[in-house]
Structures are given as structure tokens and as C-alpha cells.
Image (cartoon, rainbow, N blue to C red; front, side, top):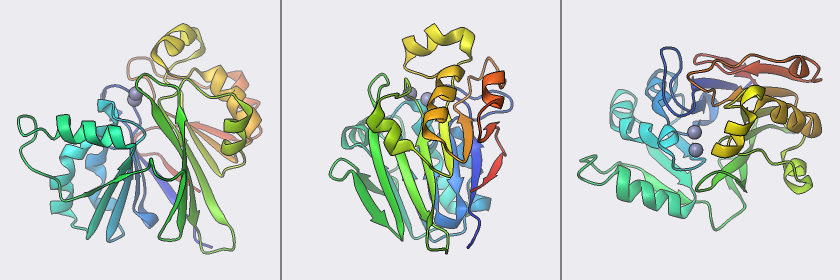
Length: 252
Ligand SMILES: [Zn+2]
Ligand SMILES: [Zn+2]
């Protein structure tokens, strides 16, 4: 059984600060990229595969602006195939607006793949599924089961830019993964801001983790102007809990 690693390349929401770039996470063994914020510039030295699959949670700028960096990334470390996955309408908006010739002059050498047709799909022995989330304009959470060389697989759940789902069906789908990556843009003092902007606050993420029992919880999409701290409620969780930082590497 091989140990997979998740590299945190960008861990801020909204905009970068001195120590955090915007959302991007990478599992080099599988060529899997989660979101394409500014942190994606850190990709070239880590690439191990001849393909990359970039899964987009939605099309807000802090999750997509790094797609425009891909030409340099692929110049530094060429790969054969790059696929960008997301909801069809979001991909269309990105291509129409972010890659409008007035904004970015060159077409990307990538394949755009809509996830709308299938709730689940298989790719290079990995399986993927997604669910819609509450967030202005809509976003999706992904569950990814990665082959690790054993009979079972390593399960990863990526839920960012979400009000935080607490219904039974969603929590059941999210349950019992090896790593739950859940956004926590706000601390508990700022619950009303979280609700106003379609994001999560710490106590709600703790409630979700209690009901979904992951082996590890990684708090992501950190507010760049108010550094998050773990609360006592976090320390009472039965799983490992950590706040993602740029450069954090999690063994899965
Ligand atoms: Zn965001
Ligand atoms: Zn967003």
C-alpha cells in the first residue's frame, strides 16, 4: 500500500496574503489538482504524472485565476494531458470571460470536461462523485477514491465555498473518509458573515465533522485577514484536526 500525500499549494479564500495563496491542493501520485487559485504556480516541481486532472469547485476568481498560469507551468513541466473538470455552465463562463481574448490572449492546451452528465465517474482507477452546495452562484463538493495499491482505496472529501450542509443525505455521502477537507472561512465570532456570504464557521465545521467521522479534518479556505485558531470544540473531536497552511503536506 502506498502513502498518498496531499500538498497544500494555496490555502486562502478570496485573496492572497503574505503567507497564503488562494485555493489549490495537489495529490502528485495521481496528478489530481483541486481548484486553481494563485497557489497553482507551485505545481511544476511536484508533478509526477504525464497527466493532470484539475477539479474546479466553482468559478469564483480565487479558485480559477491560476488557470491563466498554466502555460508557464506546462512550459516548466510538460505533461501529455490536462483536463479541467467542473459544471458545464461554470466552464462556459470561464472560457467566455477569463479566457476572453481581451483578458488572456492564448487558448489553453487543455480539455474541458463537464461533470453534469454523471454524478460519479471513473478515471485511471480513481472514482469521483460530486454534490451541489449552497454558495452564491453555486459550487460543488467532490468525493474522490484514490487507488493506494491495497484492496481498499483512500477517500478524500473536498468541500469548499459552502454554507455547510447538515442534511442527512449529504452527511451520509460525506461520511467516513480518510481526509475531510472542509472550508472554514470564518471563526465563530463571525457566524453572521459566514451565513451572509455562503461560507462556513468553525463551530459548524466541528458539527459536520462530528456527524461524518473522518479520520482527519483539514480546515481550508482560510480568511486572509483574520487568521483562524482551533477552538476547544476542535480538540474534542475524535479525529486529527489541522488548519491548512501553504506548504502543509498531509499523508492520506
Ligand atoms: Zn473561495
Ligand atoms: Zn466562492
